[in-house]
Length: 479
Ligand code: URA
Image (cartoon, rainbow, N blue to C red; front, side, top):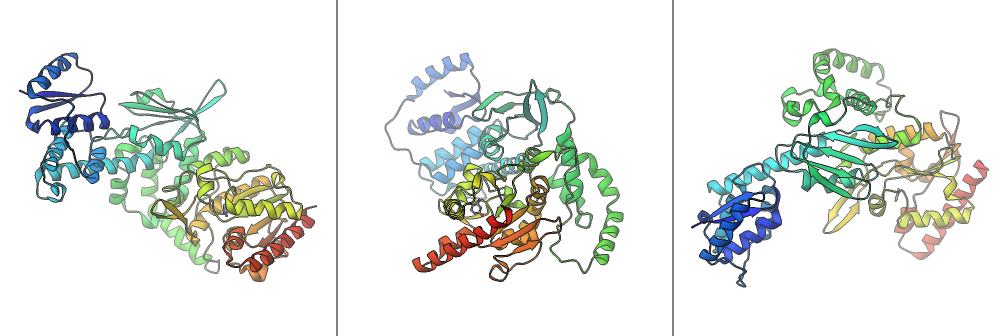
């Protein structure tokens, strides 16, 4: 006789795990379990009966399955394959009965199949994270961002937290054929699937994506096959920029020629000139709020991926003083605000000693995503490289153009490089105003983290005093 395991929904990992544990402990062979999803009342009845007949119940006996197998199961449960629960229970059954290395048996058809499913779910996850595109929908003064996506697998639930972290400050919905997820800015809600027609067709954000994509498109790197496998045509119709692809491909030869020509003409330019990307369309870049909103979706370099969110600048949009740091740290990444961690506290203390009111300054960073290296549970700050600084210069340029500060205070070499567009030796250039092309001034000083890192107390005090002296000069220049 068989037993039925009815799971609550397609990705009911907890339900599968509890049932698998119960069955394994009761000695129910995989051949005797019928797995299904949904609330089938008739199956429930049969289930109870069969359970009794097979002696399935809450057993106290031990149940040990490796974490690796459970982690794999958590991924594979998301696969759109009706046999996934049975396959996984088959592996659990073998592990529970002593086959501790079941996953190592790469020649085993069940292991192969489960691994293939896991890879396919991971690929789908990667695509969802990369290709979800929001459209702006405004209804009764509420602005909502809505995206349509067609995953291959049941991956919406497992990825919702990723989108919450990435777009924490937006109100958004992602609609898919099998499940919708809504973020209110505070709470996450799942609902039934939807249809593509449920979201409007075109909006300004689409124009932005198109401009952005065509500006980062490098014809010399065009690899059509790779592009198709990375961005399967199935997703193209949801990507506003995809409308450009046929033209971009068609014109790639001519664009390459123009690029080569432009490089030849400008060969005496510094090599760190911003690589291509053009400003966002004027219609969208209305004020700082618009720029900040566009920045949230930034993919100009790879730093967006591991970071929790983009940390944009904050402060009055007409500030006379703009303060530029390097990049958000661990705490800034989590809170979404610049300079609130230890370096920020030291900066606050120095500003107040120099008589500068931080709330009147616009505070931002050269690089807007936290770059780090994981070390156990900790995330260790990693210095942004030239490519990342150059990619992010796009945003600092826009912030400066919108705020038009009289003076931009550059804390450390990264900030100085981003705004001045060249390598800066702090000791040589700190402490005096530097004229900028737009008629405003820059002023270079040390980064507060440098003071935090100094090993001895005397040096710390001396350097802190020198930092305050710099800030007093800044104050004199803007007063
Ligand atoms: N360091 C920075 O440069 N910026 C921050 O926001 C925090 C630490």
